Length: 266
Image 1 (spheres, rainbow, N blue to C red):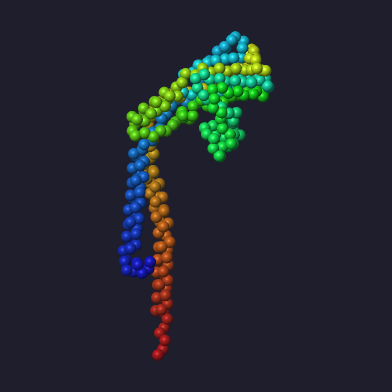
Image 2 (cartoon, helix red, strand yellow):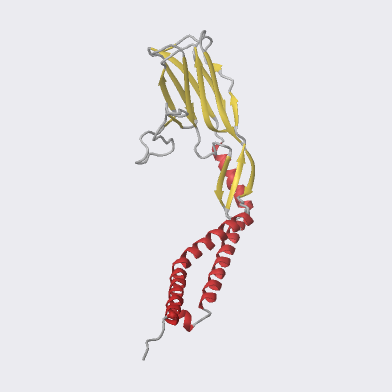
């Protein structure tokens, strides 16, 4: 490299100029991709609503209610039940996901959406689910739709704003189903008396609020990308420049020693 530099004194300036040009081009590419996005975020309501359950027969622990909204979470709470009873939730109009591990802080290797090699437990997907009561209070949690954003903010890919709004509206329309829920408490196969049982059924509903283009701060992202590219380029130049300056320093020392060494007497 030393010989190359001696033959072409402008090589270092050429390398640095080429590197800075590359950094600027890549920074602009990041900036343009940040501004011209194809991803859109849609915001929905994320309200928990307590449903008004009606008894199928007076005095019987058999209730029903009908919903017509897009639902993610379903939460059933019972008080006054006994160990050995069975709680059944039957949905007429849709299938839904259920697992005793839903909402549990001790759920490891659990995924309600899909079964993979890294997941040992998943949800059952059916219109009817049952669970066994083990104390005087009992809770069942389920998820009706995995397509709706559980936290109220979802993302989709679309060509433009209008297409994104149409896609979000279609998604919400597809998930707005009319479902009749029936909750039954059984003991030895028979419906128990509801006198001492307190029941509460809540659902989390979603309605479309707005659709906006996914945006990042282009200036901040450009600064980050510029700094990253400069760092990478500097790292690539570090070793050859270190070799060059080391060789140059060694040459200077050798030259100085040669000049300081007296010539041998004739």
